[in-house]
Image (cartoon, rainbow, N blue to C red; front, top):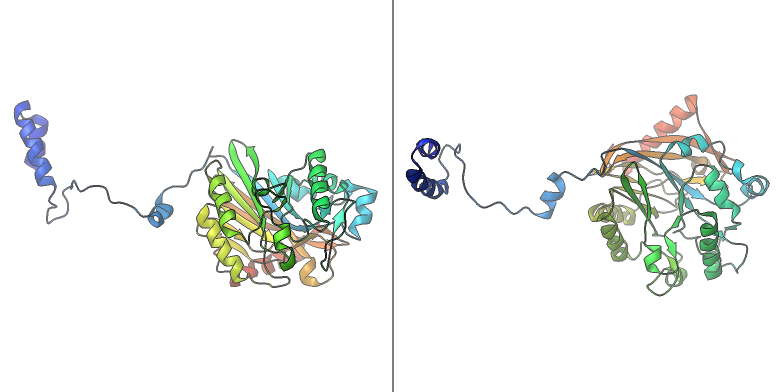
Length: 367
C-alpha cells in the first residue's frame, strides 16, 4: 500500500489512474496489523450515541445567569405589606434576585379581586399590585401553572392575564388556549436565546379537566398530559439556545422526589430541556445534574406564610449556562420571616448550605 500511495503522488499520470483503482479495491480489506485505512461506509450512529457524543450548541458562546425561586402568594401577613408598599415586599432579597440576567418564580395565586372561589381546601387571590412587587424585587417572569392559578375560575384567569398585560409582566403556563399555555417565555440575553416553559403536575382530581388548557379553551399547561408537554419542549428546542422547564410537582412536605417527578425529569431532559426546576412541596428538595442537564426537585416556599422549620427554609437557585452547557450553579440560602425571605450570613448560611447539599442524596442526581 505504501508503494501504491507513493506512485499516486510521483508516477506518471496514466499509471496513477490504475493505481487509484487498485487502491480502492485493496483498501476494502483491512490489514492484519490494523494500521492501514479502510474504505468501509460510515457507521450509522444511533440516537443514544449521538446525544452522548455530539457537542451541544452553545449559541453565541456567552454565559447567562438565571435565578429561580419557589412558591409566592401574598396572603397575610404579606398582604398588609403589599398594601402599604408593594416595592418593599422583596427588598431584603432584591440584591440576590436582581443579580441574575433572568429571574423566575412560581406565582401561586390568582391576580383578581373578582370571581367565586373554586371548591377546594385553599384558595388564594391578590390584587394586581403583586406584579409591581415582583418587578421591584428583581423578578422578570412568573409561572402560574400550579394548583392555585385558577382558584377563582375563568374570571380569575382572565383577570390575571389582563393584569399581567397591563403591568407588562410576563406570566407562563397559563393562557386562553393550549397554544398560549404551553408557549415559552422568551428572552435574548447577550445573543443567547433563552426559553422558559411552565406546567403543573399537581391539580385537584375534580378540577383537572376544567383547569387544563385545550386547543379551544383557557386553562393551565398540564404536566399530566406528558406528550403535549414534551411536544412543547421539542418545538422550543429547535429555536432556543437554553431551554428551561419550570414545574409545579412533588408531594407536599416530602423531602425526596416522587417517582412521578424523576420519571418526568428524565423525559424532559430527553426531549431537550437543559434546566428543569420546580416547587410545590413547600420545602426544599435536592438539586443536581442529570447527564448534562440540571434538575432541581424543590425550591420550597419563597413569599409565603410559614411556621415549621422545614417550610421557612428557602433561597434562590442561581444557574450559569452557556447555551446548552451548564457552567455551574449555586444556592443562596434565606429564611422566611413574617412571610418574606431574608438572606442568611455567617454560620447560619454555612449550616443552611450543608443541609441543602445533603438533600441531593435521595435524588439520584450528581453534583
